[in-house]
Image (cartoon, rainbow, N blue to C red):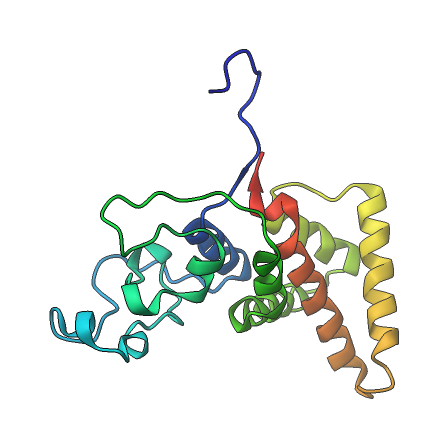
Length: 196
């Protein structure tokens, strides 16, 4: 109940808030309001075993507009404790399990969002890597990086680009892949996934 505490307990973002935060930070969030993402007629999706195809979960709209289809629940929602839509009074569990980390590591949604985040950072005019890192931390965490975080991030970018040099001869592509990887790490971090 948080009695006698000076701040609230650490709390992980709900599935919808996490998805929206990833879209927002990567610059991909579509702020349009209203409407539906279901392309079927009313109730057609209820008995259709292929209703996942009608869900349009790849939409860039806010998560509140994503349909909740019982037999084809969005993968991210399943991984991040979305309430069971098959029950009348569903409650959300709060778990910390391996599939959540695996989702952030392997999901095409997170990978593409990381790439877009990296592209936005690399497109900043006349910015140094330190400036880009400050922008990345500002966008993802709402704060500037500490000195040691800045050094570790710069070392990571250099090491990553060097590690893939044998498989990727193009220096610009190596740089973009290194930044994409760093952005994905930011998305997977506790500081991004939890409200403190």
